[in-house]
Amino acid sequence: MLADVRLNQFEVNTSVSLSVGVVGAGYVGLTLATCLSELGHRVLCVDSESGKVEQLNLGNPTILEPGLPELLRANLETGRLRFQIGSAATVAEAEIIFLCLPTPMSQTGDADTASVMEAIRELATRVRGGTIIVNKSTVPIGFEEVAEAILARDDVHLVSNPEFLREGSSVSDFLNPDRIVVGAKSQTVADRFLRLYERIDAPVIVTDPVSAETIKYGANAMLAARLSFINSLAQLCEVVDADIDDVLNGIGLDHRIGPELMHPGPGWGGSCLPKDTRALLQTSQQAGFDFPLLAQVIDSNIAQIDHMVNRIERAAGAPTSGATVAALGLTFKAGTDDLRGSPSLEVLDRLIARGASVRAFDPTQTKNPSLDAHRISVGSDPYEICVGADVLVVLTEWPEFSVLDFGRIFTLMSNPSIVDARNILDPKELRDIGFTYVGIGRN
Ligand SMILES: NC(=O)c1ccc[n+]([C@@H]2O[C@H](COP(=O)([O-])OP(=O)(O)OC[C@H]3O[C@@H](n4cnc5c(N)ncnc54)[C@H](O)[C@@H]3O)[C@@H](O)[C@H]2O)c1
Image (cartoon, rainbow, N blue to C red; front, side, top):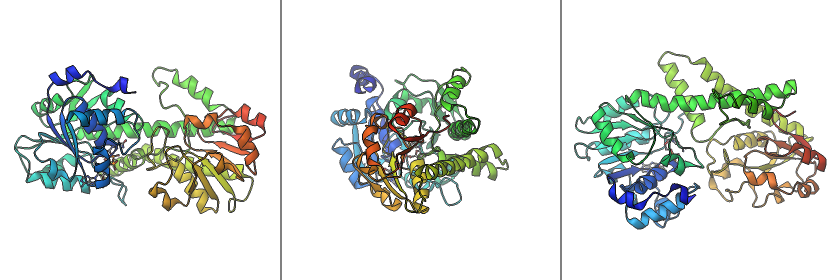
């Protein structure tokens, strides 16, 4: 992976080197800070969590991302990348300041922008004239105006530069993006800002801030719509006895549609799609457009999770209260350690609420404190969790699950029944062993 992402160091030393501040060292901020230093810029990244900063300065990434450990260590060594405990005020001296702060869903479904607003407030009285403050957090459409009112500085520029990275491939997505979107009020500011990405070869879209914010939400809503459509099609396949894998293969070969994101699943989730679709719906309704299609996309995802729960209950062959469910996969997708908004957890929580007891295995999870609230017993061995289970459920598409010894698992379970909510297992092989196999949209 390193060979793919490292850049030519001679070029780095000869290219433009800007002083950059990054506020927030999470999935977005840490990737951004590390990659910008790889591009030759001098980056100070701050975070309010001291333990995180300590680990990062030791060269230990706090998130699971391919290529990140190598890039982090190499750039710490050059001295171009530093981490410090602090808030926005700590990076006020930088020429360009990125805000990569959380914007979680509020009670009303809006994005909660409190931490971004607080950061702008801190910077307003501290930054020099000419500083560019860049918002990378996903904020409601029209937020730029709110930010401008807080900043109240004509000599400081605000830029919207939405992030499109995918967890699990964030480094390569950052260094090889499909596009760079810049929302700025003046071309001069956009050009100054774009010097940062001089060495990245990607189409650039310079637009106004409202359009930039709409691009971010529009892209996520469209991805969610695609996934909801595929999951609904899988349900149709179940009732008409068609095979969703063949159906999607046939659809995806149409070049207008394409083969990407063509897999059914237990429902879409993650840290972004659920909150961003709801926030877009809120913004839209507040602006006077109901956006019924988007409401349906969200509702059909809830229905998909219900559908999975019902299938698992039926497959357990025992009353749910008292059934033992063994679950493979807790993260919202393979390749990441992120549990936020995971459909796996939603499915399991609903089964637990109906009285099931759940044991789970995930290659990235052992004693994650955020799992404490879920009453899931997390095991360190995929076979151990199957002992005495009434049903085994595959909830995340980790490739290692498809090569488990299912002959051994068959001997461990009370009721040899499998629900494959990702269609990654071979139904014939499992039925030959003696399992009752239920896939998704598979005849
Ligand atoms: N995760 C993604 O895949 C992704 C992709 C695109 C956009 N986004 C958006 O980017 C933003 C950040 O997302 P994320 O996933 O990186 O979040 P995150 O929770 O992983 O990271 C946020 C970081 O900010 C730190 N922090 C919080 N308040 C702080 C403060 N006042 N001062 C300094 N540090 C502070 C936290 O400790 C944390 O490390 C969100 O708006 C999100 O919607 C996320």
